[in-house]
Length: 315
Image: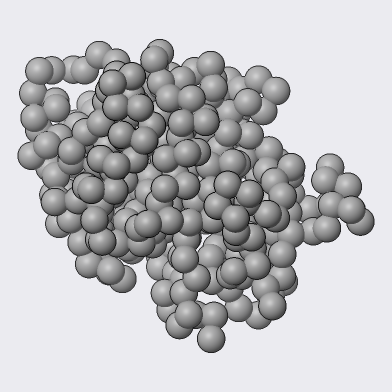
């Protein structure tokens, strides 16, 4: 029987260790199926820094999460052993070195088919995570929630930043180009070629402005049709949410999704094979009353709820 969160009827939620959802630490159990791990790294940002403090903020904001998910009628922490694996330490002064450290740390945590929910950190961290996923599953369908494409080439000549992640991933052959999807894209772009170039790299796009026309149900149908039965990696930049729902981020854009819309879309992923996921760009210095941290913690909870148990690990 998996070890679940600390019982809130015996220990107040504001007391004890600050693990994600008050789950056991990796060292507290013999085996695990899913690890929640932080990557406190934000040296790849192009505007406001501070996402290095995101993992601890999301954990602190997750204290109110409860074991039963009524929308999906599932107890995610009973189905599989979920642990908090602490943080992967990444060099804040050398992006290339940090990428290698993240890749090695994620590979160790996912050995044997285990899955990963990573708390960032800026979007630079997704590239090494996708390398690990590709090594385990082959080409990956990336479901990318973001205000921004993150398929640009370089910033100031630097190839690895939070805005270049998915171009590098596509160039490295990590992606299943027939099944990748951006959701929530909005705001001004650098050039008229940005969207066609993103499509050439393998991404279809559902813009935030299409939500009024499609509705949440229509977005879900389009998403599931695009993903098919491919192994799916979900990458969520918290700025996909409107700044009113998530002010604590480094590159906010007006006109975003509500947290209710995002959570509803994530619940529909029960119909897919989610192999791992990340939540990035939570910058607590710009947050108020844990608005962004609470949204991110609920996003993480729904992602854990749709990850199917891996019998090979649990056995």
